[in-house]
Amino acid sequence: MVHALEEIQRMLAPGGCLIDIHPVIEAPLIEVYQRRNVVFVVSDPGYDYEEGLRQAEDALAQIVQRRLFVIAGSGEFDLITSASSVPELRDYWAKYGAYIEEPKDAAVEARMAETFARVEEAMRRTGEGAEVATHEKARITRLNPKLSPP
Amino acid sequence: MTIRVDPENNEPRALFALADFNGQRVLEIGCGDGRLTWRYADRAAHVIAIDAFAGSIARAKENIPNELSGRVEFHHSAFEEFVAKNDSSTFDRVILSWSL
View (cartoon, helix red, strand yellow):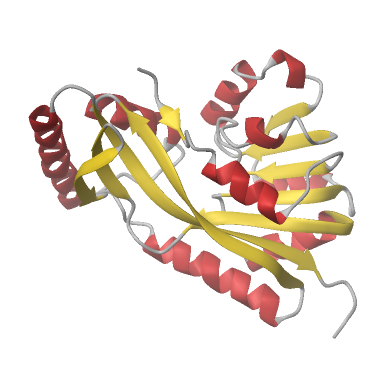
């Protein structure tokens, strides 16, 4: 990761910047909505990439510590992806996340099946107008290359 | 109903709060199906968007709006392969899009 960030610094023109966007280190939420009100919420049972996120944070900290980049600004935002049914939402993530090559292990698959059954039950209870969504929090950081040696 | 991603535009709002994209040469790494690309590309001079997953790039290419077709290039490429073919000082903005 650090090597990739070094290469990005090389490719940036003078005055350019790197914008990094990645999820914060916490599980996304699965939410059931009705008329914009959250009526049911549970942690995403498929969240198993905390180690990767920690490595990303470490890589960013290293390039700042080594003074390759300086942090010029940062913030957090919520990314909501909603659908009218659980299968529709899961189909979307199956396509969007299809680059993830490692299959989930059996325990995670079982937890996902149980959790999504609860979400579907919550949607049935909620009735007309129910929507399901994933709710992720992300951090965005602007890094300016520090071209002159310290 | 179709899938709605970021209906309140939180992601582009956060992006534009940190950087100006007007007239800029942009590299987006991990563009996926172009979900974020479409939100800023109309401001940029030129966008190269790469992703290592062929399926995502194919969907992105299918969905290029006409008005952006000359301005945005999608490439199926791992970052390391892309770097090996590109010169220094090429881009004004590089976005690591949920990909570090």
